Image 1 (cartoon, helix red, strand yellow):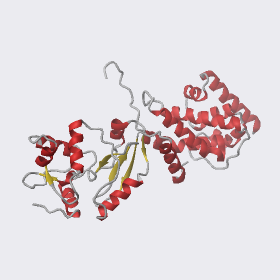
Image 2 (image 1 turned 180 degrees about the vertical axis):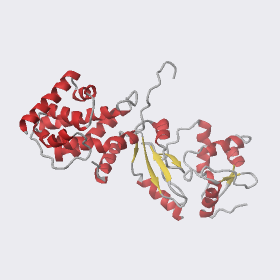
Image 3 (image 1 turned 30 degrees about the vertical axis):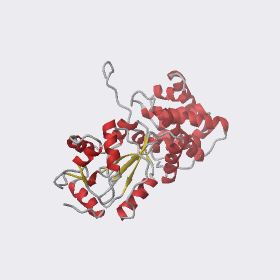
Image 4 (image 1 turned 90 degrees about the vertical axis):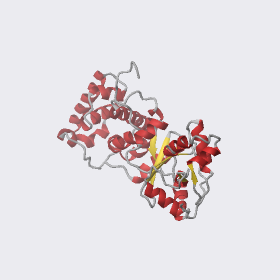
Length: 182
Length: 154
């Protein structure tokens, strides 16, 4: 006996409505393939480029009550971003990272659409001018790429350096935004 | 962790849910017929409410059958009229039970759950006892009493 999609959707909605879920996730389409997006009650907490089999990792980070459930607002804002009609995200975020990382991610969030910066410049912004490498590590572990635009951060010589979704994706995101590359 | 015997970890709820949602609905249909869907949702909501208190991932199938049985018992006690379920079951392995299954709706709730869990889902009596909140002996007695009653009704 197989449950109907309607019954399944009813249960998932009831579980979220009753506040019984630690973290819910959804898989959304993007021009670069599927993305896993995850949110807690506090807000968007993860975007991953590989949606497969991440339930254990979500459980480890946020709690066992992991449930797939539509994240319509996240989906809508990402769709608009990929269409080029949205330049800033209005989504609440759940960061839960170390203080230094939070400071860096906070500065990262302020890098405008279509503009690039460098690891060193971000390090300056947080008052740690010699911490460019540490800033690179924070970018590398960015829990919410795209929304927190680590793709706008380049090496001091203008090189792409690295990206969790691959350098090709970093380049395409910058092209989508019309960023001028050195 | 030190001093803790390695046990099967509790899976993320999504995996538990995907693994058991269909057979739990099948079970509840056998007990409740068309009234099964509300009970099914209630079963998984109760499971979710208790889920972060689970200590290990063993016996989760028996655990969810226990919750489903409790929900079904509540339902049957409130509205005890039997509901005939005409839908054929695809999961049955035991011929005798397959022939008799449609008659289980005439059994008292405890016997009905015991018979369905034993012969429909092949649960051991220890787990049926947990599901019924009784001793293993009482579970065995309920199942055999149910079977005797079914034989008389044939």
